[in-house]
Figure 1 (spheres, rainbow, N blue to C red):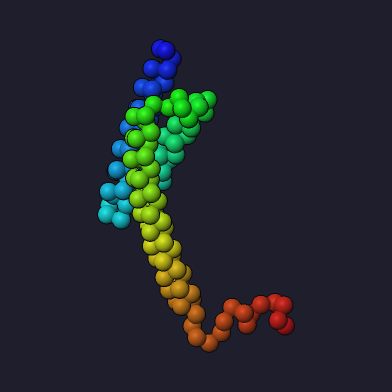
Figure 2: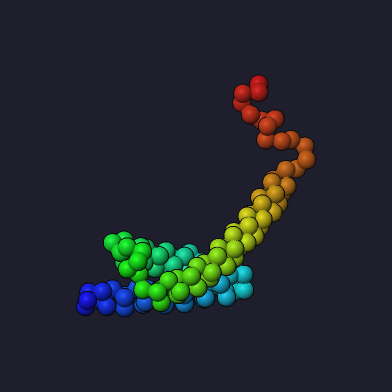
Length: 122
């Protein structure tokens, strides 16, 4: 019984940390240029890993109903987070494509192309 209570506290702590990380990330993605998405993602991944380890030996009927409800709430936040991260990544791809095109345009002087100077063409 004491081991189950200890596990419940650990699960509750991890769920709480995960929710805080998600709330912070969801609020700052796209709004805070100084936000460190890589670090936030590492923290989020760590929490998800810890939850997996804490639940690996538990049968579905052994999980407290309060955790089920909290997990469903967090699942909703994870879905929002997934959409925000996806939008952020698409925006990054767009910027990279713009920069790539600008560099290619700056390198081209309009007279010769890279393909004209390949060794295999002679």
